[in-house]
Image 1 (cartoon, rainbow, N blue to C red):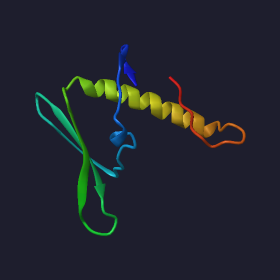
Image 2 (image 1 turned 90 degrees about the vertical axis):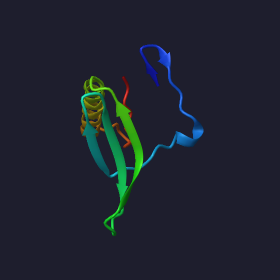
Image 3 (image 1 turned 180 degrees about the horizontal axis):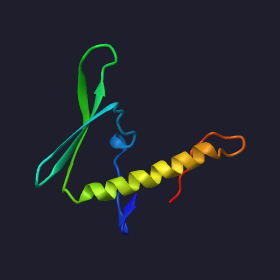
Length: 91
């Protein structure tokens, strides 16, 4: 990953990421927090698997990037490459 020329790395323990099927967003004047949670499909319980807190201007960047990736996914899923179903998204 890189952001404006900065090299961003991720350690091997976090490389696989986490699975979430629920999200809760809380905010104040100074910060916004997104909790990603995994809900149990049988019991009414869950656990937060990741919490991200950031300044209020950051969501615009996040939404722009999500929109770009979503658009690429929609286009790729409606134009599959012959012989493959892998999603290849390039910037």
